[in-house]
Length: 69
Image 1 (cartoon, rainbow, N blue to C red):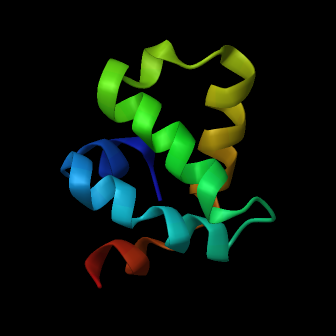
Image 2 (tube, helix red, strand yellow):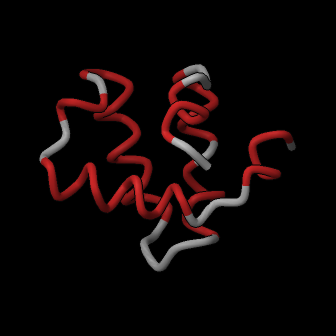
Image 3 (spheres, rainbow, N blue to C red):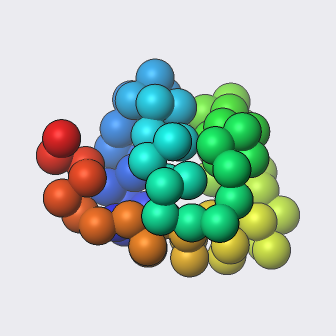
C-alpha cells in the first residue's frame, strides 16, 4: 500500500486500518493507532523522520487488496 492510498482514507477509516497494518508487521495495533492519531491530528509531516520511514515501510508490507475490503 502506498501513503497516498492511506491518506485518501477518512480519519476514521485510517484508525480502523491499524489492526490490518499490524497483521502484516511486528508492531502491535496500539502502536499504529498512536501514529495514525498523530497523522489525523497534525498530518504526516508532524512525525519525526525515523517514524515516517518506519511507518512507510510498515505500510508497504500491506497488500493493496486490503484497502478494497
